[in-house]
Length: 555
Image (tube, rainbow, N blue to C red; front, side, top):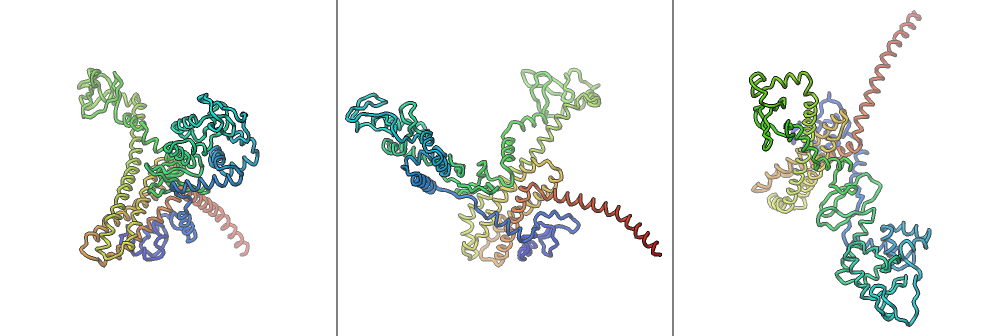
């Protein structure tokens, strides 16, 4: 592999990023592929494709919303519906809650059949009960008589006193978000209780709860918005449809998948992530370990692990059964004629006869399955640990190291952003690399598996080189007594490694999301080439014969 100085020199050339890990025949030192090795055609793309990829990755298809942004958008929707339909804001709120905050849905349903919508939602145009003027009215809850001005009614006309309204509203608020769809206290009455009634009768504490529910409903009932899943974060994400990239980053620094709300996991799809998470948390791997490393006691059937060299096994109390580890028969039937303590001729002869094939095969399969899972899980977890460490190192660099480095090298901190950018790239690449192991675990195709492992290995190699540069080589300049002439060389080198690593990982993500289509294309081209050569060989013989025939005729 080329040295890092060679890589640095290559970065100074304009073609450095395009040739990173490619099989191209450029003169720079980034080309690590021998001429005899196959060109996988993975990273080497024309300029237009590279520009297109960079442009696609830079598109922001989501917006991070703070509480004030959510409240503003909510009030804008309420005001729009109120103005278009010529109804009060309280009634507009009831409509939007019913139709999950879809303004277009409200408009469509309302103008299609206003009367039906009013009945379904509970916005009544006329009272369902009539009251005579000048008479006392009886509260429908406490059944006490009150003067007309002392009772309050919804559009339905059912009378209730202020005290009962206060208790009714307070109870429903404390019962949870169901208060947002509150109806008239009269049983079977469909009239909806609007926001104006909560303003009038709820206490200050209850109003805070109500408006919290009201605000949260705007996100939780809205198909285009979701809360950030980070603990303690109160931001929401508004997502724009029309893209297959669901990875979003909140301003709290939490990156997650908008589709499944798990941590960001490109290039792996949500279904694979769900499978991987279930596998990591399931008890199946414990059973695989038990199958691979233990045998059941012939008497009590409890699993026993062999932890000594002798084949003489004794089950734990109260069983205490003594048996042979190899043939699982009673130890009393063993002696010198069966091979002694460390071998069992009975087992060997029985195995040759095929008596233990099925059990051994099942145990071997369990062991292989466990070893395969362990291989991928360890690397998945190791990259997660490295990513967390990189996040800590970035925070430490921002709080301490950049200021110290600025003083030592006599360089403004604004000119040290390349170090922060390198750490951010490492954090992102560790995340991608981590999920490639989950991708690889579920990748069945053998040909694609080889191609995938090649790409994954190259990605890991490039990332380790970048990580080493920013982690180890930076310490030299932090511990220096004064400014160093080599610092500019380090800046160029680190910037170059950051850039080419970013380019490679972007192409890696693209390849995995496309299902490693290059393998299918290569196989198709190879089969066409083979059939073409075969037909030419057959056709070539006939051609020569024909040519000779004509030549003989000419003579």
